[in-house]
Length: 124
Image (cartoon, rainbow, N blue to C red; front, side, top):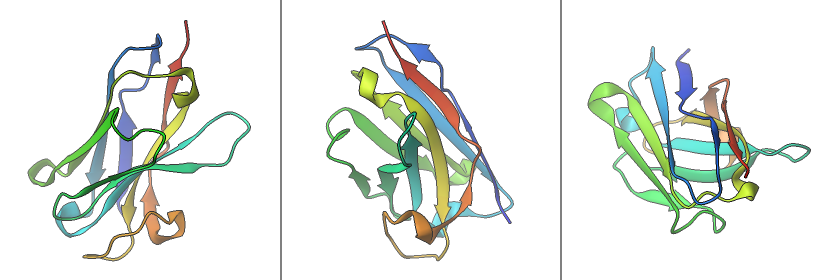
């Protein structure tokens, strides 16, 4: 089973930028879709962004235009660049690897390797 470790979360002010990193070990991600999800306090975990195995990005409507997902297969890394952060972006951000290679979905049930999350807090 793969180990997924997110990093980069911290307290920032509205309008700031932040880049989250996701390091995967124990599994080659080059043929896997990778997803970013978040859970705000008191809410269910939700889809934020995903990137197909060949680099096509997808975003939720709430972050489209502000967030950019990317991947670096040679390093088994995925990134989430978050710009113009808003208080509603506050939450624990999780990175996850798809269960099956060469498939794409935003359904959380189809992601099998999850990290422990990194806390992002947007507050003035």
